[in-house]
Length: 387
Image 1 (cartoon, one colour):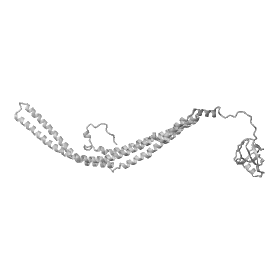
Image 2: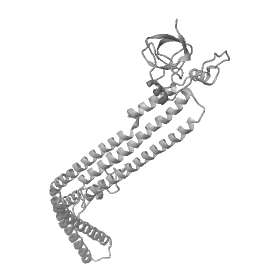
Image 3: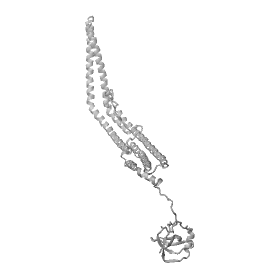
Image 4: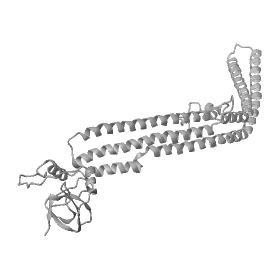
């Protein structure tokens, strides 16, 4: 999960995994992965706050303008279209609020739970996996490191012997070029150079043997180190796989472009906007505020007899008194429209014929039965006997 280097390091040999101690980068990867989980949780908890704040802002905007629009002189399909923006916004607000809750309750908790299970700690030694890898790498590398140190010691000794031989050779050449130097002295310088050459060859032989020893041991060393490394890689593969699924799950929450609810919101909004109809709105205004409004033009108004109303309790008392009941009833015709104001009163139109089944009481009310079978009171002076 660590970022890949853009360029190779300057001294690739020293930075190589195989060099002593360089396995520590792989060991530390566990701790870095743990910290990466913390960062991921923090990152998307902040995103959840952003979603929640956005949902609140949408709701506040909708509430503010909804009250403003209700007081504006718009009407008809144009008013419905404007109001549809607010209902759509309320639905989007609820959606973003649910996204916020999902990021916290589902994704955040899921990553935290997985992190706790994946990174067990060993008392006083940090993470158990880190301790195990460090111990295994160290044990596998220790014999090879010792051989490498011995090889390096011999290498240094060999290079010094080469330097001494070169110095002796230079002296010998200068001595041979000096005609004034005695043969005895030249002989000593030659012997010193031969001794330096012999020493260099001896150390070279030791160097080659040590290198052969290291080279012979290297395959075993590499096999052991790779086995430990592959175990570490497998643990990291599991982490990468889990976090990939976590990212995809977060993406599903955040990607509202494929959310059916969002599609429905904007589809309905678009349909409402396309339903704005100039002719319908103008017709509505004409019929409700213009020449199309119903008007009671001046005409002769016939006199309608007043109706003396009785309180309900008094009428019930009167109903208990014996009044003549007409067997079969008498047909009467309504002279005026009447709308019953109480449940026991009849309603009828002028010209409607029905039966009077009880004579008029002292308050001017009769009992009748309409053609539909409903029985009730009506004002006696609103009807006449039908011929």
